[in-house]
Length: 326
Image 1: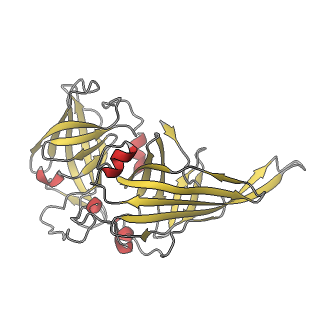
Image 2: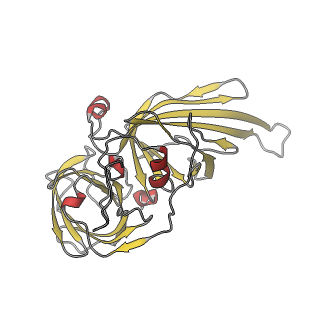
Image 3: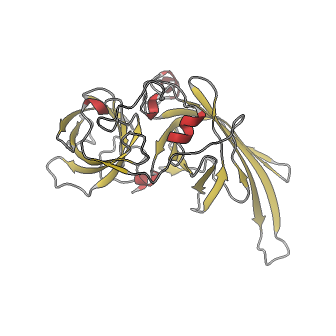
C-alpha cells in the first residue's frame, strides 16, 4: 500500500473553505456506555471498521473491504472490495456476526462478536464497540476496538429524529451536511482519503477550524480549515497552505530559504448510494463519501509551480484512523 501526502503541512498554514466560517464541535469526552445491543435490522445500511471495513447492505449481504488495513490476519481479497453474505445472532448485550464468502481469501468464515457499545459524544448514536474476531474454528484473536463509520445505529430506546440528518451520519436524508451538522458530527474525527490508485492519506479535525496530520516522514503538522455545503449533494473542501523550505545546511553560507503557497480543492459527493460515479471511476458503490480532487497547486517564491492532476476516491470518517494501521 502506498501512503501519499495529499495535504500535509509544514510552517505557517491556512486551511480554508470558500464562503464560510467554522463553528463549535461536540464534546468528544462525553462517553456513554450502552448495555443493550442494537438489533440485527438496526445495522442494515451501517458500515463498521476495525481493520477490514464492512458495509451491511441488506439483512443478509454485505460489502467486505480490506484494501486499506496493513495487517495480514483477516481475509484480503485480491480484487479489493467484494460482496459477501452474513448472519446475525443477537443476545441482550452483543451481536454475533458471521461473514461468509466464496472468495479464495476466505478459507474460513469470519466470526465477529460485537459488544461494549459506546456513544462517545452523547448524540444518541452508537459510535464505538469492542469486537472479538475468530477465523473459523480457530481460537479468538485479540479483542479490538471497532467503529461505525457510516449510518450508525441509534442507542436503544433513544428516539433519535433521523428526518434531517444526512444518511452517512445515520439519518434518512441522502444529502450533504449543513455547517452545523459538520461541526456536531464530523469535527473531532479523522478523515481518511482513499484514492482509486491505492494512495491513502488523512487529517484529524481537532476543532471547528484546526486540524493536524503527518507528512510522509512522520512529522506532525497542523493547519486551519472550514467546510462549505455547496448544494443538496455536495460540499467543497478548499485547502491553502504557506510553507518554508531550507536548502543546504544552516551552518554553511550556501543555505537558502524558499517559501510557497499551496491550494487544494476537493468536491465531496455525499450522495453515496448513487453508483454512477463509482461506475465511472471503477469503485464499488456505497463505500464512503465520494470525492474528486479538482485542484492541488503549489506556487514557489522562485516563480515555479507544481500541480497534481485531478484524482478520485472515497472518504471515510473515523474517530480514530490508527486502527487501520494496527
